[in-house]
Image (cartoon, rainbow, N blue to C red; front, side):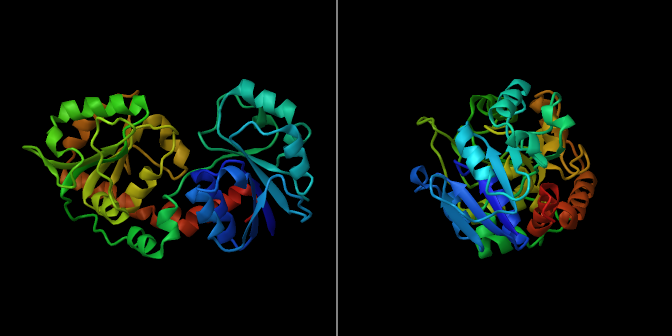
Length: 345
């Protein structure tokens, strides 16, 4: 199949979609604005995939597509959307980011009649309660996968997906936080947790563990605050931290979904995330079974809970995660599920 993906600004989700398409053997035509993305590593990673052609959105294009997917993260011009949609034999599909009903209606009117003929609508941030497309077409949640570097680099991919961990083996760290402290909502959550855990500021951003009287943890944070002394982790160090941690903290960031949840699961580390985000990953996440769900932003209660989980409970949860391997976690499995949602499998 010849499949088009219209995305003016390539993001991690764009790579997720592109990777899933080409893994199924289809030829991908990525239509984007190359002029402003010369240093976009995600675009380069997509170019490195097999059977990918990158087309500038202002170039002439005469190849007939079997289907066109439009990634609506920006306010595209009506002319561009209608022009590129004419290249698709089949109805165009859409990837929505926002759950705002008013915004949906505005875009529906703006891009009519293309918007009336979407055969599939895929939501990144979950199915909205009030949704125009609920009455018009099939809707799915996209789900999410690991970061592109763990798919692009064979050595890193082998290390990430070797599933060499034993559910019964005790781990060095009780928990970890590895990532950006921004936005401010996440910063405040982390501030509360660090205060509750009484973490030694001298050991934050050190690859050495922080030792408490009852547990050890590793805490690596970075951000745009010059007062924060950042310590970047190599990809191998990052994998090792996940592999050696019972729990991985995944507080909400700029987007509701994060690669960290999936990466933690793959390495047998139990993710700790907001309850309202469980369904966004479309992999049967369930509190106390394969993750820890945080109720109404009450992160301290969840930290108290995980600190008191027994070794037997940890083993059961990791065994449950291991059962997810061939259903949700392997890259080819995730890609196949996504292609089915997109109607190309």
